[in-house]
Image (tube, rainbow, N blue to C red; front, side, top):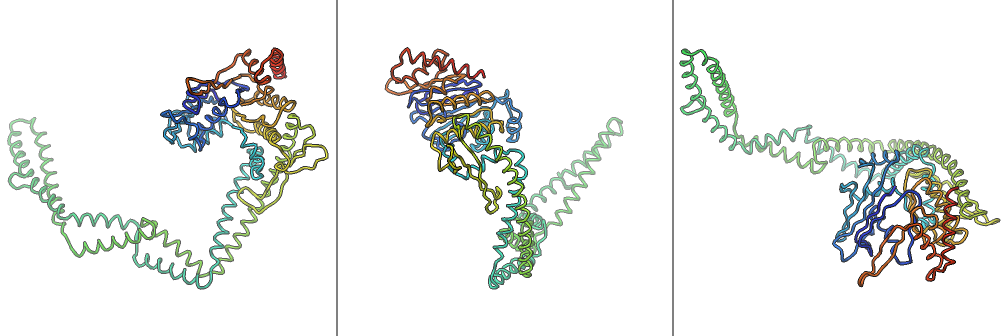
Length: 558
């Protein structure tokens, strides 16, 4: 549920805090008051791309922040999959706009906008005029049906996507192998050259690392020799060397320990140091004698390293990748050497994969057809509730070439009058009719998802009278099981409000500003009267508004 909307420096709004409630939250106001700014700010917070028009030009920054409560287990699990943790069972989404750029945060941590959009799909469903228009595009109908089918479709649909990827890869590979004799010979020559170049180098795994160590040692042999020589001098047995000094100290302690037994253990420790130092000195001497600079050996090392680096730069960046590249090209050479057999094998694999794909597509199609029959029935029932008394709704299936979503091409068909044949929705539905069809779809899909908040913007486009009353009743029904936020200009819908907000535009100094406030019951009736009566609100209009509100209260009880 959306608990709070906080907006700062957005268009005509200096700052606004909207504490929302369960049930039906209604936002009304005169045309131009700024109702669209509120929903626009919600969209900005949830990752709207075209956000620049919302930020006030005279402000240092703009902010849109949403606070959601999450008490649905399905939502919790979905958020956990995104590695998001709840704080006091809440998710806070904010987006700060500064100088044409934006920073999005979830629970205080900066996140990419793409993650915010994923979160929004779990928590909220925003229904606006663009969604009405989306119904006109047949390609969107399949997504609606699949959303209704839900979990029963997810496994088989995933299998279709996997099989199609494999089928498509085989198809592309087969097309790539359609070579002329000349092209095949040319490719084989080139591959043979590359394989030969790597073979001639006799590359061994890890060889470059060992050579680099040897190269560093040889390049720095002078510095190594200087360091070792100085260490040998300082630790040696010559006068002033560490070994000579420790040996003298040992002799002195040995003499003294003859007169005091307590010195024996200390003398023994010094004897160990003397032995260790002598051993160290011998090892250092041996290393010193082994160090030498061989110009011929150095040149061989450098040449070998240059060759390996050339191969790495050309074939993959590491010895392992060079060897992997060689294996891959050897396999390709083998394929080209037995070209016809290879193509026949590919064709056979492609046919087998197509058979598997078509079988999987058929399974998905059967699930969809069963879901389509159920969906059409439910949508028809809701449309009848929305004053489409003689409506018929059906979903047409056509089989096309298989793709990642299967081979189904579907189309929503509708007949809104007796005797009228079923026709594609986009051919017969007006704006008001489209909004009711979309409301019907949303109503049916609402039972299938875990989204706790639904926002309706412009759901009342092109409707009035009895139809508007039916739409308001349906909104109230939806609001029984989830939070609904609706912007409307119709009194019938506004009267159903559990919580009513009024958006007003006022002149502050020389500037127009937008304000939003929660209305009391009496203020809500006054706002209904304004919607009903326009500029002049008479006693009769107020009485009508009161009766409308009382009727709405009674309607919501049943």
